[in-house]
View 1 (cartoon, rainbow, N blue to C red):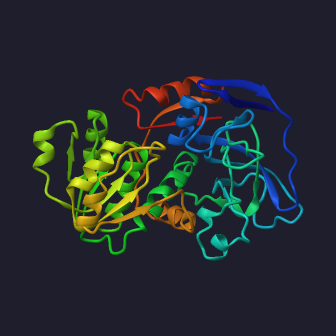
View 2 (view 1 turned 30 degrees about the vertical axis):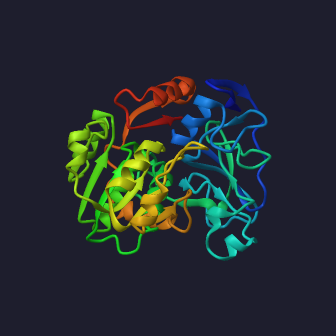
Length: 339
């Protein structure tokens, strides 16, 4: 089979690999739609993502939907030809975190398209992928493969929103208007946030947010407008930019909450005294847990609308170009790859 492997910064090569063999509890999938995630862009730009440094080439891609090609001998809930969405998380199920329901924190987590484990798990930028049957969700008849491939990033957004108790009626600022910030916006609207503002330096991202239902937007580089902002109950930091986090700390209410979603640099300065004197709650939100089925149902029922998030689609053979375009942005929100 064909597979695009990451060899280093901006070095993704078309390679040939053997079609993987499935186990009794697994299925062989043909990925049909793959979304390019912020972590894929980090890997492509730098050759690594945060602390996850590849030891050898592997295939990116963890936001995907596909069609079942073969089922293992123990698999009864799936059939050849089923259209499915895939939860890319493969926790051990045995550690303290897994037993406590926080399997996203599992130290033995295996994750599609990631160098976080060794051996690395090839992602969906390949013609075939093996997945545990329990990670596969059959699509409702009214859900497209394109929307199904957005369920994983939507889960990241839902997990972040769920870190805050009683979000209904709260005023919220989202710093970062990329795909995750935009999906947090849509999740917040579904859960009844009172007023939602998105901050982003990019005019396209701000306009996209307004068209998606944000109450207001702000350019963080415009100090005059920034200083006019009323304090917010909750801040979601989804940009991965230390200055955005500092801005959030500045404009959150006393006793307010900050949720860190974006991947920040390894070392940066934080306004610790403001956190102390304003008695802020600072929460991390890493990947997601226990939300995939909810995400699927929220989209299938129309409570969360994913229309418009995907702005460009490339073919499988154009994966290197798609990654370059995702790196440049240039008026794109979410780029997907169709096989």
